[in-house]
Amino acid sequence: MSAFDRSPVVGGRHELGQNFLVDRRIIDRVVALTAATRGPIVELGAGSGAITRELAALGRPLTALEIDGRRAGSLRREFEHDADVTILEADALAWRFPAAPHVVVGNVPFHLTTAIMRSLLARGHWTDAILLTQWEVARRRCGIGGSSLLTAQWDPWFTFRLHERVPARAFRPAPSVDGGVFTIERRHEPLVPTADRSAYQAFVAEVYRGKGRGLAQILRRTSRPVPAERVRGLLSSVGVAADVLPSRLTGAQWAALWAGLRPTTGGRG
Image 1 (cartoon, one colour):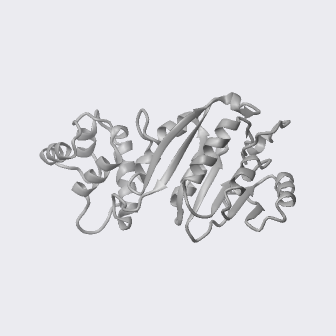
Image 2 (tube, rainbow, N blue to C red):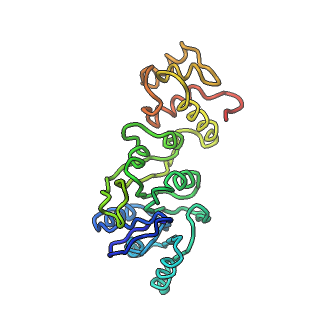
Image 3 (cartoon, rainbow, N blue to C red):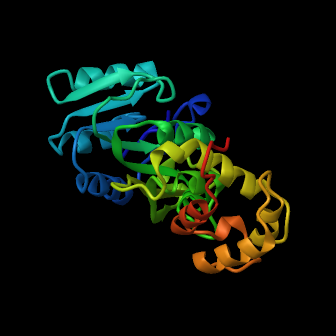
C-alpha cells in the first residue's frame, strides 16, 4: 500500500502502488490536519514510517496498517517499546476497523482509490479522514468542477473539503499524475435520514445515469416519473434550473430533492 516517507528511498513496489511522499511540507500538512481531530488514529499504508513517526508524536493511540510484510516488520521493531503504537501487516480493504470513534489517515494507492473510498464510506464509527489521492479524484470528491456519483450518494452523511494539490515530484517514485489532499468529516446531523440511505443512493444513481438534457427531463423519465408541473415547482423550491446537470447539485440540494420526491410508503432500491 502507498506510504508517506521523508527519507531517500530506492522505490516502492509497483504491484502495491507504493509511491512514497518525500515532501516535508506536505507531510507536515497531513499531520496538522490530523492534529486538529480527536481520538485514536488508523493509518492506511505506513510504508517506511515517516508519517507514522509524526502521528505517534501526537500522543494518541495509533494503529498503522502496512500490506508490505518487510516494511511492516521493520516498523514493528522500531515501535516495539511504544505502547500507543500498533503496527499491523494488513490489507485496508480486508482489515476489521475499530467499532469505536477513530480517525483515518492515508496516502491511498492511486489504483485502489475507488475501492478504498467505497469501503471507507460504508464503514461506521470513524469521524474524520485525511486522505491523499490523485488530484482529479480529490477534486471530484470535493465537488470542484462537479461532483462524482459517489460523492453525491454520500454527501448527506459527510462533508468533503479539498486542501491542496501535491505535485508528482513530491513522491518517490514519481507517479504520472499529481496528488491532492482532502478531508472527509462525518456530519453530526445527516441531511437525509440514515434509514433512507439505500433508497436515497439508488435514487441518486438513477438520476445520474438518466437520459435527458437536464434535471427536469431526467426526473420525468425515471422509473417513478415525476409530472412536469411538479418537477418545475420542486426545482424552483430547491433553487436549481431545469437544465442543470446532476453533477452540479450540492449535497443540500440533493437532500431537498429527495425530501420532495421520497416515497411516502415502501422504498426505492
